[in-house]
Image (cartoon, rainbow over all chains, first blue to last red):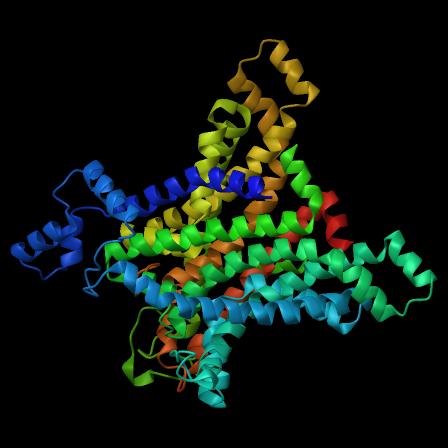
Length: 317
Length: 266
């Protein structure tokens, strides 16, 4: 097991190196003088020069890259131009928000998605089955920011059940935290529920056709016990894989959802950085989320191989 | 069939947009602001500047679909070139695919926003930013099918007959590797229409005053209490179009790759 994890970690090093390179180089895409763009249209020559000095833009690209790597190794992502503070601490401060949002959304997705998938498989062709199909299709077709606006309009502005946006830390007010995150988490989760339900349904159907299920039925086990004891366990492997994909979708979706609901998470930090051309924030934020992405995939693969020994053996062979 | 009908309808609307509009979509008439739908000359009402929403929606279809179309073409062509090289000339495989993995490691929408913002707001830059995030997907798909096709005996026959590698790739390998790519491209069209809406909504996509579905929704957002239709209607247009493109993709997959259908139905 340790060997497998180590092997996977080493394999992700080149990818992470390229990720850092891309995150840093995006700044080079800016046409013209980046310092002038950052300083703004009304900036004087001195102000532009100051920005250039601050960002070290006088140095050649390779020198800047090396300096960036140097401080990166010490965990320093640089100073934000607009926040006037270190990017590392700004990001660390925002991790709990993004983590709460995606975790909450994940709980909703897994609870409703797996339950709906099982029901859809057991009662094929029922309304639950058809609803799963429809919501899977809607999940890939609805614009997430639009769904968010509609939900805000209906449940926050109209019915007044939830706040229209903003965040309350869990440590201050757990009920307020739950209220503030329910709409964003539901938006984020709803779009993925259908996908999870579809996968659960199809792997459940496959399992229900297996011989051991027939044996269990033949020896007179009640249906719920067959599903619980024999079927669900074997559905776990494909479901975990999809949960990995869903996590990536959620991290990506949270960028937009945090912006619409004014949640002070990492996604919103990066979007604000991008819109205001705060380069250290863009580079740091992109890097941190991409590394998180690579790690999530790694964790999923490891989980996957723990759950299904056949994969571990194949990797060793 | 439903998917195809809606896509065909939207495409027609986009092409004929110039003739279908009833008013200049950019014309500001402050005394007619916030007219609700079905009010006299404004079929779908007006926005906060009194611009005709129906005409803006129709012109927006042109912008959104044009961008989606070009993203599909650019990511299809680049993905084919990159994927074919990686799959056929094995020496490049490692480095090319690691680069694609790295691009895929970013949350796609975040990367697109960063590229679009860095390049500056214009339709072309939106196409470039969105293509950058979909190229890895198309490249992977082409590579995977090239890897299968290059082991076929007719390829071996061509190679042993002395045909140059590049010609083998172009004439024998690629044409037989296209089916999964075509299916994927219709999904990319769908994703790109969605992603364009997100970029325009956040202000890094189609620059106003040119209407795109995303920036109409962004305009409507501040007035959702007094004029919800400005937000609602373009969102429905995006959803319907993307839904139809997804259905079309599913239908194409059933025709071109029947094995997957069996699996989805199981």
